[in-house]
Image 1 (cartoon, rainbow, N blue to C red):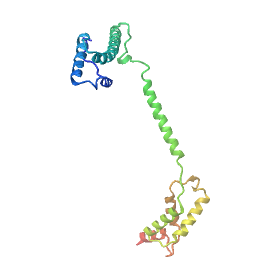
Image 2 (image 1 turned 180 degrees about the vertical axis):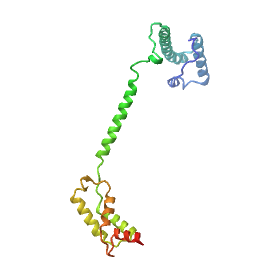
Image 3 (image 1 turned 45 degrees about the vertical axis):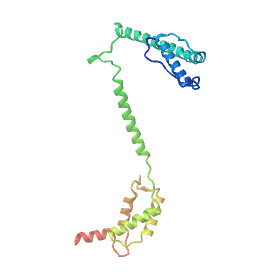
Image 4 (image 1 turned 90 degrees about the vertical axis):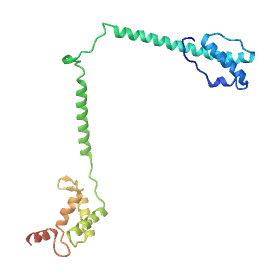
Length: 209
C-alpha cells in the first residue's frame, strides 16, 4: 500500500459508522489512514474494530485489483518494447516501390463513382410524368388568356385538352409528355377566341403595326 498515493472510500462505508459520535468517527478515520500508509492495524474499541474490518476487506480487494492492473500494464509494456526493437519485423515499403495492393483504393473510388452515375441515370429514367388535375389545367388556361388578352372559354378548352391527352395516354407524338404547361401554350395558339383573333393572329398583327 505504500506505493499507492490514494485509496477509495465507498458510500457503503457510511452505514456502519452513521450512528457513531464524531469522536469515534475521527478515531476510525485516523485508523484507516494509518493502515493505508503503514499497513499496521491500530488498536481500536470493539465497535470501531467491527467497522474497520468491514472496510479493510474492501481495501484488500482494491489492492489486489490494483496489482493485477499494474502487472498487466507491465507485461504489455514489455511486449510493446520487444515489438519496437524486433529487427525482423517487416517494414512497409515507401517511395516509388510502394505496396502494389494500395492502389486498389483508387479503383474502389472509381467503381463507386460509376455505380453512383448509373443509379442517378436509372432514377431519371424511372422519374414518371404526373398528369395535372383538371383544376390545374383550367387555372393555367385562365392565366395565359389573361396575360395574352384572349377572350376564350378556358373551362371548355381545359376539358378538351384533358380529354385529348388522356385519350393519348399523355403522349406527345411518340414521346411521353414532360411539360404539360408547354403543351397548353401550344394548344392555346390554335384556339379561336370570342373576339375573333387567335394568339398567333394577334402576334402577327402587332408585328405589322
